[in-house]
Image (tube, rainbow, N blue to C red; front, side, top):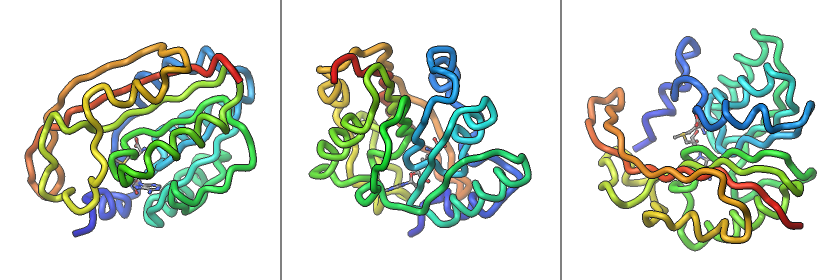
Length: 201
Ligand SMILES: C[S@@+](CC[C@H](N)C(=O)[O-])C[C@H]1O[C@@H](n2cnc3c(N)ncnc32)[C@H](O)[C@@H]1O
């Protein structure tokens, strides 16, 4: 079964995941002019478009062709510059270090055995004093039936903090929220969010 967002990415009128997250808005004053940003698993680009509109240099990729087609359409009609790629997080070929990397709602779709090396790679390709914003689902709530095939890497509560022990954690949040996908499946998600800064190189 394809995840619900694939059909929602075909709807060009509505942002699939709503407005930019607060922690993305909150980091903006801390970024230098023209900062280079990577949006991993960007979806239809709520964060990429918001950040490009401010004037940052944004690279964005997603494994979903539907997501990138919609993001390309939205950047075009809004005359925004976002470098987009269809790519699996496991295959992304880094060319630059970034001042901010966002991985919002993506890592739980990656196999558990691959998560540590991906996070380490993202950390390596981050400039000193750069930031990561990570949001992911934990196993404190069951996986909704329509996402069973894709949600293969849910995290333990607090597990993500262990990956950032050598960085400075600026914010950590743990909460639950009710959700209902377009197909009418009601469920609850348990979320961990972390904002961390690389303070050593
Ligand atoms: C819940 S959506 C979040 C989208 C976006 N980050 C946001 O916050 O609006 C998860 C996205 O991760 C993408 N994704 C899942 N696995 C991926 C992978 N291995 N590599 C790149 N993107 C992936 C999906 O295609 C989907 O667009």
